[in-house]
Length: 410
Image (cartoon, rainbow, N blue to C red; front, top):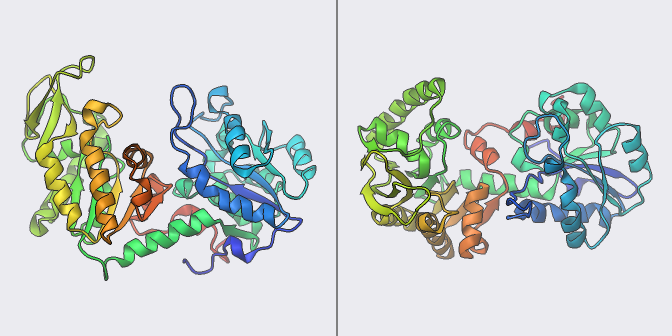
């Protein structure tokens, strides 16, 4: 545990109002139904602790990217039925976050009540580290509790500015405590549980390129799959056909420089491993038109959408030999059954290796969704609720949301 941070166990909430920052930015389908409720389920013990001590809970969260404007699409109201069902009580809702009406609603709460406020991001000030917005929010609670690990890499008002207004009366919830403990365990693996394998996938390399640079001296094996692998293949002189690659010129210039550095460093240690083959298609409308191709020679007009059988075996062999595994990001478009075999095979191998005694940490909504799809989610050491936050932690920097909770750090 990071020193000088209080946990929820340090407080008794009797007759107190907890202003609880959660991360309820859950994935939903086109019918607005939740496809993975991990973040909600993991926040429940914190809420239950507060109400069992006869405290009151005011929940603040964000959902999606409404960019400072109220919108029915991004309203948090849809969470009321699921929260009420899990907590076995009638969770209240109010359509604002600040103002006299909100304060009145909070003052009317009785011990054991739970109130969910509307999406923080309906206010542009939330993403601006705005002190006035923080001050208005601070009126709504006696104790600030941050249980939003998934948002703790963001320098947003409710994450970084708000806790400072609570001075000593701030803490982390059980979810955040668990995330920090398992991250600490992962970093301790450097001394104890080797080999360490880190598998990174997903569509974009820009969000993860600096993380790869940071883990070269930590990991024994770095496996790169999904859209992230294609810039590496291009850099090594391969042809990737119409496969996904970021087009923004400024981003790609920066990425190219870091790629060269990474490839040179990794060559000396032989720790960077890319797919050997991919499943390709020449038609998104008719995905039955597929074939296996070397990832280094994808024909023009064809797109790589999953790792192929040789790549699956290659990656799984490394995972099987590992004592510590971190996975973030799918290795293909796994939502489509034609391109899910690679990601599901990875999920299965990580689960089986964990059962044999390895420590596994999996983060990111897509990776967790893939584990659940195959029924492997209960076989992982820890499912992290943070995708970006987990990756930022790999830079070994204290996340802004955790830093703001350190006592005497105002």
